[in-house]
Length: 332
Image (cartoon, one colour):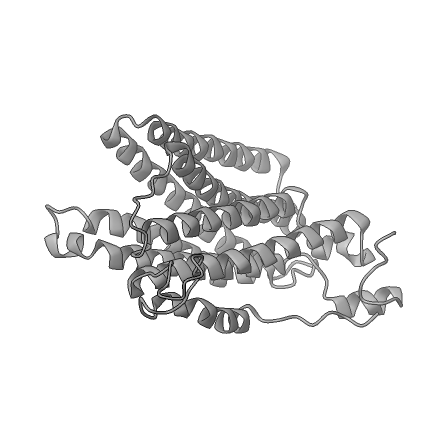
């Protein structure tokens, strides 16, 4: 069976993006015209809103494709295809692929909910105000929080497992680090779900905002932990007899900088958008929202795409090891 062609994500984005550009055309464009009259569009977004909507749709598609690849990686690890995937060189631990799959699924749902809300509420040709329930916003924010936390935990679990393999770190040291990661998990889940609960209940807006800022601070702390841990591990494991396949190298110098940008930008925006600090920046809130969405989409999709390549031998190597087609029989 010939191997399936792989489409680069950047090419996919370039191909799919023009499909949604028509939403920012003009009020006379027949875009999603459900009335059938042909006299005007029933769905029209202003250019800024159209760009926002397009980012949600395009990256929902991209992240969904990444979730399929994450699921396939997990399947290959379960059936041990190729055999080298279970070797120490490619070992990532059981938690990493599971958390990574959970992150991609949650992120896909978050983008879908985000896109639906933005398209419906900003449709200038809809004369009837559309309202969404607090539960809808709760689901939207909860999936976004879970996507970020799952991605962070997947990388922390990966680094902990690779440290065990590459450096043979004492069990006591690893247990302390694992306990610290679990405490961070509990704190992030508590802060994020507390924020969501208050939003669903419509209570204590000030407290909810403070909880969110505290969550962002702890999330940034976790990202800094990834950066420091990966750089130290890369430096200490260079003489290891185990082949690392650039896992720690990519984590230290590709994932960590992008993840840091992803984590620190919301904190900067929260500070800039306060009217008493910079009134001009507050008036440009839609621009900052679009910038935050674009930056978050791009950085997170690159981080996830990099993680998807960890611990999984290329299909060409798989065919050389087994002497079979690059794809295993599904009945196996």
